[in-house]
Image 1 (tube, helix red, strand yellow):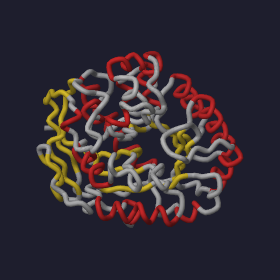
Image 2: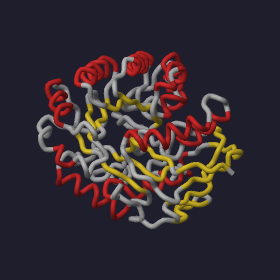
Image 3: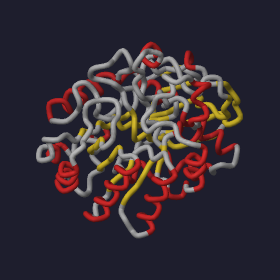
Image 4: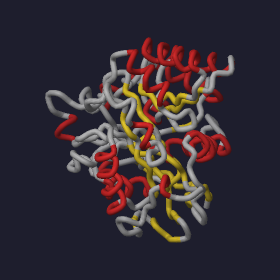
Length: 354
């Protein structure tokens, strides 16, 4: 039996408020525990988006009532809230800026607005960006110019990881994450998954892009599932929304990669625990650990997941390593496929005195 620290997923979409038929704080955090994650950081592109004091309070109230694991909530950068968001910095997981098209209404297209947020958001608080291609290059240039820490979400392409590596080598205070679907799937998998079910942002990339992520893993700071559930009816519809469920499949995929010598266990712990805790300034979770049967070989099936999505792009894939037990703050919260904690057991990580 392998024992890991309680893992941290710094990028999840729990769809509450506004789209609880896809996921909510209860089902999403149950999925987190089943996947070996004892802390999740939730993104703000909900309905309404989390972009002011009122909506942040709403999200945190819902999380406090429903969450099975510990959590924090991001606030979203908008065209007209750069002066107001800093007052929420101590309560939020960080600020998220959407600079490319994704699910939800928070895209920022005006670089003048980017600069305002870069200038006004506290330099010691996490600032995360969704940026791709030329947009990533522009945001990276601005981060270097302003000498401020910026975290780049779900980097997926060769040119992007090489730009970030070069910036780091020049001393830029930037960090980045990679999602499991970009490490373990490529555009060649789309015919098998299905065109609608393959919709995700950033899109699935080429085999060369995937190889570059693995070849430059030492320039990656953390793994993040980008858990983004939608129903099968939506994914199979005329206008499928982008996003995959991922909280329950991420760790088994990583452990399979360890078994295949693509990374070592120490790297996995750094990428899923040590570095996320440092980057996002998270408190320690005392008496918290995850037990894994590292020899268990099993097929992934969407119908077995705790997520409300009920499907996965990894359907039928064999993986090695299965979460059998999770202890959070001294309490057994998951065992042998069953979530044992009550809704509301999770703590707001930003409310814990560090």
